Image (cartoon, rainbow, N blue to C red; front, side, top):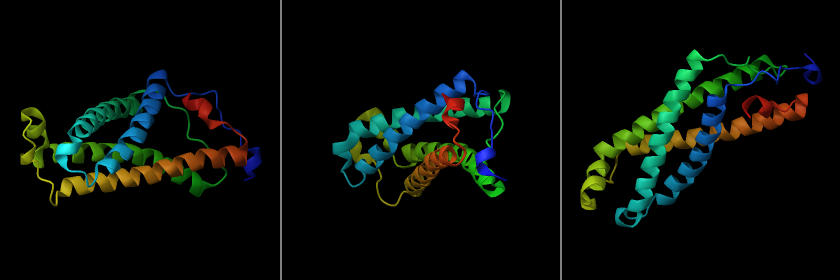
Amino acid sequence: MDKTNIKNDLDNKYNKSTIVIHWLTAILILTLYPLGKFMEGIPVSEKILMIKLHVILGIIVFILTLIRSYLFFTSKRPESLKTGSKWNDKLAEWIHNAFYFLLMGISISGIATMFIGGYSNALLTGTFDIIKTNDLKSLKAHGLLATIMMILLLMHVIGVAKHYILTKENTLKRIS
């Protein structure tokens, strides 16, 4: 298939709720990941406000992901974009779907860390010496999933740019 002759229907957009959730979630992820990385290695007593912010923003992402997952199954969506390569089309679809699973996994591992690591009790009581920081599997999973998310986010952005270069289509019109 000639990639320059591909014409996707870019006027067929996602619904307004999905668009708002998409961009808000993107902004929050781009805030949460560096914040989480910055907090690594800092003593708990010095990062408690950052932990609170991370938790609040993370809960917002979790709620937005639940809403967007609901919309995924109940709202009309535009057809998947075609690139001229079946493999590339499947990769793009896989990456889009993986975002939902990763966001759920990151949220669940974050919530588990809050309880298993004693963060929830510490935030409620102000007693930070009860926080367990050694070898929390849920925290390791949280960090690993977040890193995978960032890799997929980078692939997603590269895919948008690649699609624009190869097909001369501004696919952002569908999500803006």
